[in-house]
Image (tube, rainbow, N blue to C red):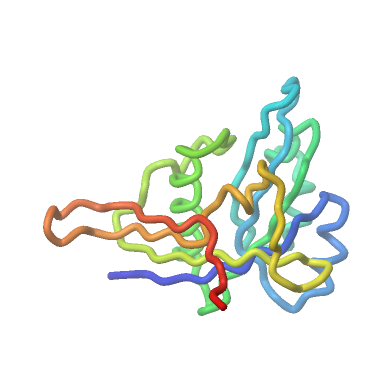
Amino acid sequence: MKKFFILKWYGPFQPEEVQDWESSQKTTFNLYLIGGKKKYSKKKIHYYIGKAERRLLSDRLNDKNHHINDFSCVNEIWIGTVINKKATHKDILLLENMLTSYFDAEGELLNVINKKLPEESIYLINEWIHYKHNSECLRLSKTSIGNLMPDVIVYKKDDSSNEYKLFISNKLKATK
């Protein structure tokens, strides 16, 4: 069965900005992305992808054993919600798995699980929204996870070879 998701990502936040903004929203946020410098790292940017489906993300980030504590400096946090349907727990796990498995090959990912691509077809569109302006983010830094993560990720079974293949489109551009 093919799964289709549209994820709307809001950011880039600093850790102290997340709670006030998130609590003012009527949306439930399902996933989050963190980018920053790992402890004892001078220049290299590391990333973490997680799910937050049972409580506020800001509560999750305050957990004593959360991976945000592996960062000496957090450059940005993005929080995402599925906008085209009510996402189930299984959907969120599938999306987290899809994002971590894709991004593991592309960047310095701190996640230690979910690095194997799922065994079902998934179509994912990512939208990047600046939380202060509530408009599309047009300029992101080179190291921003919003710039590194493709706008479209398709992972589907090729009928001729019976193998799964990954397709991406980095940044979608408007036509005139």
